[in-house]
Amino acid sequence: MKLVKGLILVLIVVAVVGVAANFTILDVKDANIVIYTNGTNTNVSTQGTVHRVVPTSVMNEIKDKVSSDIMIESSTDQSIKSDVKNILLLHNYTANVKIVSQFGADKIPMIATVNGTSMVPTLQNGQNIVLLKTKDIKVGDIVVAVHPNYGLIVKRVSIINANQVYLTSDNKNVQVVNNETKLENGSVETVTVEKKPLNTWLPSDNIVGIVKIY
Image (cartoon, rainbow, N blue to C red):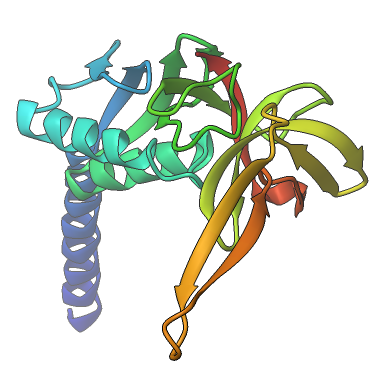
């Protein structure tokens, strides 16, 4: 008799666990998310979503995150997709994520503004540009890169040597500046300084992308 009771108890436990497992599986919803972005505007939609539509609040959360991510120079299509999947997972969704831009599927654009005259006459100070995030560059490309002292810079690729790239300015003019310093005796000392547009070697990993629209 004791054996029978034990067997019944085991069956009940198995049944309860089975119900819980089924509930958990059914509670997770599938979503196919498509992100459309041109670097300035971002829209998010679903395609073939199973169970029910993703709530608007979640879609807006994804849109805000993607809009923020694409402006981070180190972000990639994979890092953006991972962030979107993490947001959906918090709301019990498993997801397939696709990114579409003016450059194609899973190609990430980024908007930047030219600061300075080193790329005159090609680029003007204050001009907006659109770049495609990529490390796949060639000599002659105009690229945006991260400089350790100056932050984001826009230059032309002149030399590629293994994992190093030599970036140069289109503006070849040398600016002559006279710096005047007043001395203790009241006289003025003038020092003439030549300012040349920046040309620099950088690791290829510092390349953010190629300027495509300007």
